[in-house]
Length: 160
Picture (tube, rainbow, N blue to C red):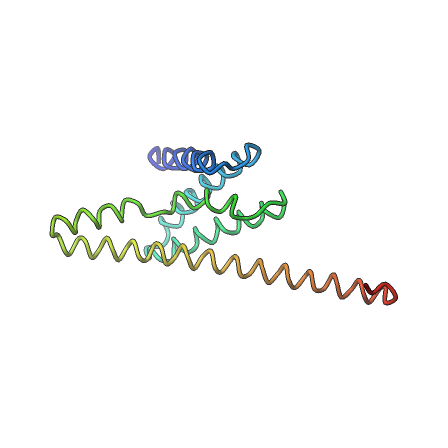
């Protein structure tokens, strides 16, 4: 339990640090850090209930993407400002490192296992982002087209 609290806290710090390095506006840094902490929390909770790496990573990435899209709409800024810091806790750095170490030590079974886990994590992250981004994009296009159509239906003489 204490270890998980540390992970969430370190995820907040890492996401804020990422935001600082990539010059995210100071007023958005807290939100960026919160996104990383909440994504890690979501990941840890899902990992406790689901044993398929791809599935819990996919759901955590969907959470991070949805968080970023909601904040982007509320704060009128691109979603990538919040998405990139929020996904920092999901990046499988240790798996990639262990894959490389096992490769150089000629431990092929461990290398293949780590490489497989790394690929599943990255695939889950990618698919999670694509699903939420596509959904929110088409939702915006749908409502925007309804707004434009309703405007012309209410005011047929004001066509530009």
